[in-house]
Amino acid sequence: MKITFVGHGYVGLVTAAVFADFGNQVFVIGHTKKKIEGLRRGIVPFYEPGLSELVKKNIDAKRLTFTLDYAPAVAESDAVFIAVGTPPTKTGDADLSTVLQVAEQIGKNLEGYTVVATKSTVPTGTNKKVQRILEEMKPAGAEIDYASVPEFLREGTAIADTTNPDRVVIGTESKRAQELLIKLHEPIGAPILLTNFETAELIKYASNSFLALKISYANAIAKLSEAVEADALKVLEGIGMDKRIGNMFLSPGPGYGGSCFPKDVKALISIAKDNDYAFSLLSEVEAINHQARRDIVRKARKLLGDVRGKKIGVLGLAFKPNTDDMREAPSIDVISMLMNDGANISAFDPKATESAKEALPNISYVDNVYEVANGADLLIVLTEWSDFMEINFEEIKKRMKALNIIDGRNIYDPEKLRAMGFNYVGVGR
Ligand code: UGA
Image (cartoon, rainbow, N blue to C red; front, side):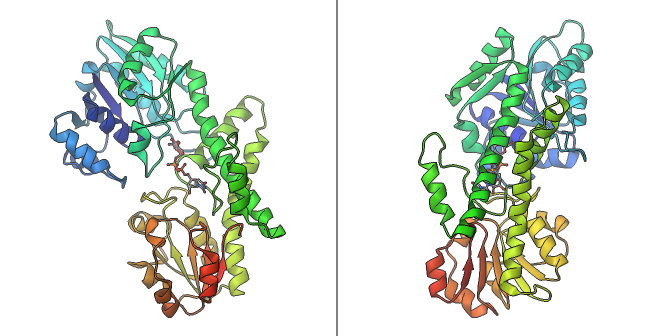
């Protein structure tokens, strides 16, 4: 099949590369010349394990082409996917301007029969709007069917999530579009759920918000466990053993971040409000998430007394491991609060140092975990990179000024560190 993706972020580029790898002829349309020129040489503008290799392999096999032009890619394609960003506006709604502009461009360039599908996360009702634009813009003789095909991949494991998803949701009432999209997704071998547009749109928001809810639930249980001297990790393990609950997304920490959960929870609250429903359950999910960040700072104040003038070393800046993405990273809030209190921060992240510099320009960035410890009064773990699991704590001990550690991701053995003389504080332990 010939297919086009408009957008080369995590969703667009990963899905395009995977579909190319399945043997399809895939075009990727972007609007930044420098990025497209880089992509043509296999340079991926963000870090995602395995992605540049997959992109290069499919460029070499002539199955993956990057372009700034809608013609002839759109005209030649059987299916065109919209995979551009929908960042939040100040009021929490999704900014749809790029999706709508892209729809116009696709519309103008259609030829013959094409299925146009949206992968971008868009509020209910948007797909009807996009369909109207496509119908208005398409030249005489062109025929379209429209679908919503939401994406469920995670950063850091994006390729595996795309080749092996729990489900594929295809939202369209056109039989012809259903058949084409089912055929395209066949090599994936995942269960397929057929729905209308609105249902597909809502599945995406409802999934992300439910996962965010699980994380906030874990953080609430962690807070309560600290108060009653229970071990939250055992409590959560205990509830996760119930198959109806499941054990995933129950790790407490500094709260969820990234480009999806914070934005999608906000957007679902806003969609509900527009439909006269106060989704206060989700407002509480957000409140607990903010509290989780503040709790790390509260623990630092408790350990150090006054943090003013103290040296705090931070391990991990990215919103999660295996990515350089700093969007809505808990580290930004935690570090900003500590700096407001007068702390001096030095930090190390295996991948996100460059991307962190914009949000956190006034901290010192060091090259490894041991340098973070030099002269530090406190170490705080904010991202659970596997590199941090194998630290030599004897070496850390020699370098630190005071042996305080806040393990914001519960990656270390408290007993072991306490036996070495550290004041260890985890989340919920
Ligand atoms: C999330 C969803 O998991 C994907 O299914 C979805 O496709 C994607 O959003 C999207 O909408 O595009 P992602 O944001 O890449 O994926 O990352 P997650 O692995 O879900 O983690 C999100 C945040 O939750 C991270 O900050 C992570 O540290 C935090 N988290 C996750 C916890 O604090 N505890 C957990 O138990 C799990």
